[in-house]
Structure formats: structure tokens, C-alpha cells
Length: 141
Image 1 (cartoon, rainbow, N blue to C red):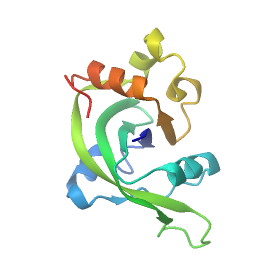
Image 2 (cartoon, rainbow, N blue to C red; image 1 turned 180 degrees about the vertical axis):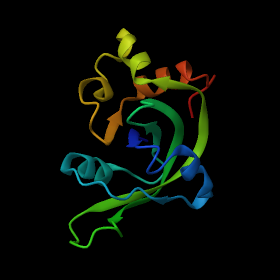
Image 3 (cartoon, rainbow, N blue to C red; image 1 turned 30 degrees about the horizontal axis):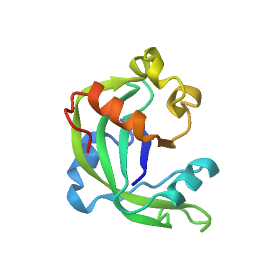
């Protein structure tokens, strides 16, 4: 299993919007960055990811699961962009802000610290466990 972080502006698509989609999930559409698209191509069904609110909030607020592997993005009329489908798994009891991540020396190599603008990024197993713990989960899913 691999771990990921996906980012969304809460005014465009929020954690609450994601939760309302239920277990069937929804497309993680609209990504128009080649590196982020390539990261989605690497995602497998069952992989887990952090749901990150960008812009003003800048915090990890929930956990999602990949429920459908890469396929054409229905919002793309050119046919060159792809996406995955994700479903909400659970809230993070204590949201973890970007400042929290940057302040923890154990996370200094995390892509979120080094390239905070990338909208879909991998997370190492060590980073996953640490953030789950900091977020109030006794056991990382």
C-alpha cells in the first residue's frame, strides 16, 4: 500500500463535500499539473491519502481511500488529463496545519514541506504514521 496527500481549496471542494459522497467516492478531477497527474497514475485501489485544505486553512483534515484507479478526467475536453476516484475514510481528530508539519524536524523531508504547491504528492509510511499520531489517531489506518 502507498500513501498520498491530495489538496483542495475548501471553497471549491471541502472535506465536508468529500464526506457527503459516501463510500462510492468521487473523481479527484481538475488536476492540471503533470507531476500531480503522474502521481495519480501511480495510485492503486486501496491506497490511502491525507485530505488537505489549502489556501487559508492549510491543514490536513481527513483520510481518503482510492476507490478507482486512474481513468480519463470527465472535466477534461482535451482527453489528456486523468484522475482517480477517492472516498472519505475518516476525519483526522486534530487537524494538522502546514506550520505543525514544518515545525516537526521528523517531517523536514516531507514533500509538503519542500513543495507545498504540488496538489497530489506521495507520503512515506513513516510520515503517514507520524501525522496520524499527531492528528490524534492511536493507530494509523
